[in-house]
Length: 289
Image 1: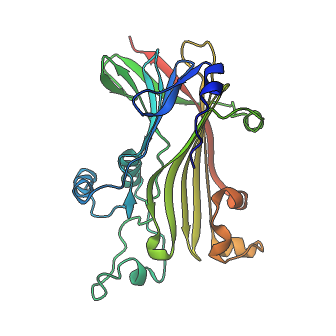
Image 2 (image 1 turned 30 degrees about the horizontal axis):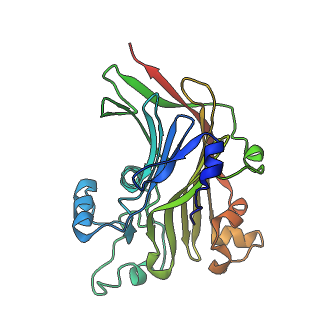
Image 3 (image 1 turned 90 degrees about the vertical axis):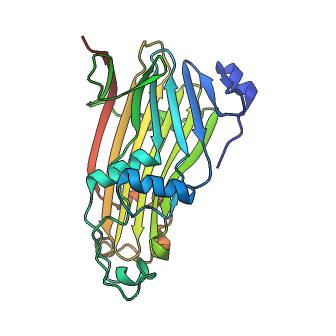
């Protein structure tokens, strides 16, 4: 769902629409832009397989989709993209979810071959965004070691004020960007997406990985980022990550339904899934000596 930008409200809030037909806005020193394109072509798909050194990728990869939030004065950029997310999937290398019928529904194109599930076909990723500093048109990774600016996330006790975010405030810009999706051959869903909301007071991002293997497992990995517009030389950005997970059998033991149709919306059922990891961090910016 997209929300059309109200130019009058945006002007009152001190912002402006990006030029040249770009999807986004510039406000309080931030340039926020979303990109939505078609899925990877077959050629692009092969290139990604080579780069990621795998023959297994999600059914639908929106490799040219992304969300970018750039702080202009410090050249700091936070962005979300499918390639970096799949790098995280490769690195984490979770064991495959055991599904009795997996040989029938995931590899039905090769029915006479022995099936060995030796990779995480759910494409679960620990990825929660990318950050970098762009100086003189040169991108410097967050783990930079050449003496230039450095970005890192530091654990903190502060929490994102969700009550304040729920207050009535004009939405100057909203968009949802899908990065990849796999329907597990009609036996569930694996979905990675990012949503952004910009208000006069600041911006908020929800980055979500959602997995439902029907009758077996549900997994929800949410990352929320919040920035309040202010006069700081470097903006205060909080990032809160929360991972939830449960089997269908564990939910049934608590009296919850086991019908997969009851679990189509992760936002509604998230509180039923126990938390297995939670942390809050703050983005730090420093220049090495």
